[in-house]
Length: 562
Image 1 (cartoon, rainbow, N blue to C red):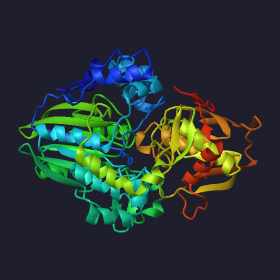
Image 2 (image 1 turned 45 degrees about the vertical axis):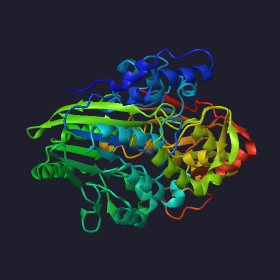
Image 3 (image 1 turned 90 degrees about the horizontal axis):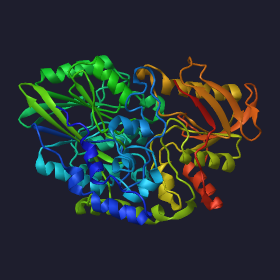
Image 4 (image 1 turned 180 degrees about the vertical axis):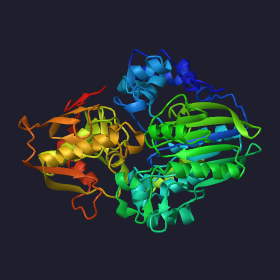
């Protein structure tokens, strides 16, 4: 039996928080919601899983706005996680102005953020993990990857700060994606000497010898039964990220390989099989339907946060959000050689409500101390909400594109469709840490080149097919490339190569001509040898020169969705 909508108990404890000033509502929220409310769980069964994923190196509490646009196609159309705003709230029975609405949707985000405060933080996550382990000491803590990348400190330390923090949390296993952008030598150095737990990747092979490059799964004895945890790294890492950073590795969905590993785990005695996945939710949903024998898929990569599992046959697919906003607890009743019941709770990590763990707080402070001056330097201020999340341009992306246009003297700017990056509320300082939270990566060069209108059209069509292909196994990247200086129309349901039209140069209002040439600035090219200043320097120069920046939601992309 599934413990349905357990997350929403927290909303009942603080529903009706509205009105008055921000200070009143925030105080009321804190008074009406308690740590015990958030952690309450009727312990059941004999095996407990704790899942975190897509932390993106965020050790401190953050603001993080969920998407306002998340379009599903094919079999995933209008199904979770492809519901947003009111549709999401109606589906899950979420009350207006509740903590659940704040944590899980983009609706009234600024007002609710000021009422309920930031979310996440490694010290709060440690409190949640310790509380669960106080009830179930042998609970398995599983990290879904995208952990070692996404902040200034992780970039400066080659991910070492995150490795030490997750070692201290008592992580039992992980898989990966952005980890590989640190470079293969660094990844293997961490796995071989710094990491206290297995790094699993059933779908990662040595390309030359066609042999597994990492352990596919590991077995644990928990609750008196053997439990197999299989790792699945992001299948399209060499396409979404530069393959020259991790030469000799081959990835892929490898559905037949997954079925083989599940059979091996069962043959080795596993009575519960857990897939620790960085596939993305729609890929996991298809894999659950096609590969028998998986009891639970802990999903990552697409940053979805769902208060209930999606059940496909006998497989429970669980999505635990990103940036430290949530921790999932899953209790399994494993008897007579199989999983008989699953209970689940998506725990929201409200940083004003969950007390920081002192040991972890001290470790985080020590990791940040060498960079404190750099992190805290104020570069400018924002007059509007800055966010990056959703299928199309977010306001952080618009700001980055504006910086590229002005600082690199370009007609058109392209910014990658990344999902990672914390938000900022209006009337807040923009620090160097904030800029790095949306730009910190190992291939940051801001290039300037020339492209024809035909080339620009081809780029948009290619990314659109990666995102909106009806078969999730062909969805190979993030969200749509963000654009500055141009607008376009996209018809989601159109045939490949025919989705993009009405491309317009905003500076003149003229149509972008296929044969005309335009100066284009961008960053995060997957090509080797790209030249240009790091994107964080470009953005910092623009913000410092402007002082107070504003980037309201734009309408440069006209979306036609089925």
